Image 1 (cartoon, rainbow, N blue to C red):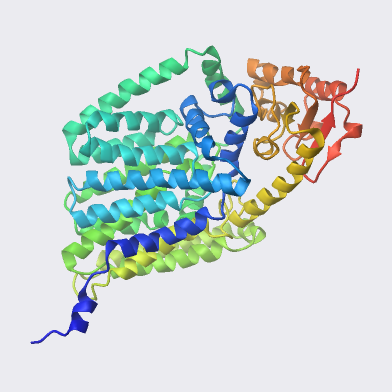
Image 2 (spheres, rainbow, N blue to C red):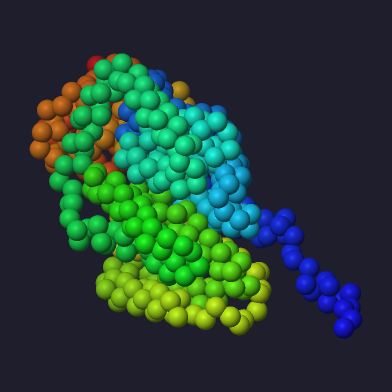
Length: 541
């Protein structure tokens, strides 16, 4: 039998750099327009405008995270779009390095094709994470955990331990993410896992202890818990949170189907189920502790689900000579259904949650059943289709009309909507800065992205006064030292203006002592007003 040159070309596999280009395209497009999330802007802005900086400004984040973001702030130069693009590109380079390190480490226990597939999927899941997740402490912890797996299995295991410690220290409730990574290391090399785990415990304890040498850090850690007073912690809230995350990230919704495929082509089937359930439960427990129900708190689940999906595709292909077309087809259907639901208006989503979640759950059940009975033979070994389907599924969270959640916290935010707000704030607050002077000291009674866009310095340790924002609600908070420091900053003699964001702090709901401080020291009858802020000058003596 003769083989033509054309046949040889058809059989020749597509080179890896081609697939790297396919995966890089949505990442590059995203970096070019989406910017950073409002919470990340709040941290960057708070550290920039407060004279205390990363060492002593309160932005409701642990010291390790503050210093990390402070370092990234070096790249936040030029216009908002340019600066945020540079920060994202630098961060994406770190993600690529972590994924490459993960691939090297996984090759110790997986076939080369499996290791490459998992590392690529995990890296892409982090790079295309929902904009509300990107650079949040939970997302940073996931990147550190990915790098820790690679480091512990290829470099001295202690290096992996240091990265595991960093995964814990950037958020504290991110401990489950570090434990998941340690579990992966243990599955591939128990001795290295012991060294990495022991190192992580020591480094975490030492660095945490050193951070508490500043008495204010310990007080903040204790008092900031009261910022979450009054939140709802219930099974119902947890279920709704998980359903929102599954709708937002189709790979997570398909985790049960991916697990079924993996069990059919792997040994120790019970171990796969137990480990996956424990990993998901640990992350959700970390979400339930603060009870805030922000979707970014589940950031570790997205790369986990993507890695499982890619491993299922790769292992089935190696065993049966073709991809598991049922899982691939289910991914297409679930992705399409989720995208249609996410693309609906906020009003529709708010009133049709039962319908949408029921549809998603039904599709997932059908996918699990279909994957459980798919025959092992037959079908074409076309690997390009699963790659493209996987990229499309992971790209759902960063599409312009995708909301931050389906019907949970910030469900009215969309990626495109937040970019419009960025442009609006940039123009409005640039005009305000020109009017009052770029170096004029102010006190902010606004969410942290207002300091980010305005950029005027503040003598306050609390650039965005979280304790005043909550002051009229949680019992006991107004008696804390942090609340008193927030109020005292209004009396600082160097402050020339108060910048009030009415939708964040309602003037009518201010506690009496705070309302009196604003009224006595600032003249809001001569305020400079925009659609979003009220800037009141200090009263003349």
